[in-house]
Length: 111
Image (cartoon, rainbow, N blue to C red):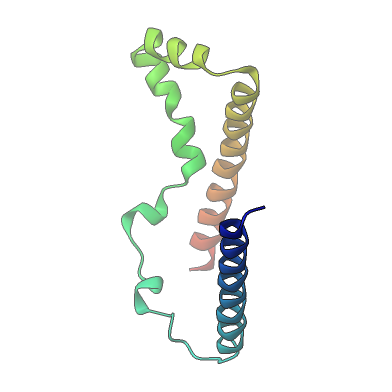
């Protein structure tokens, strides 16, 4: 190990110590219970909030019906693991459809 290597190791060690001090100082600042990070925007609703991503994903059979060659090409590029994941997402989406319908019925009955 040369002198330059030792100097570089010392610089690296000092940098690590500084980072640890900054991290420890930031940890102390986290104790305040203020709502500085909260904004009213978090309570806003948008049209996309109503879209369930799993149900949207399952909409791909529409692609399969409209362009079967493209759909087949896309599915063939996936390995078995990802095909299984896609099937799992499709099953979960069906469950979500049922849950959403139940929620809508309960909401309608509550009013």
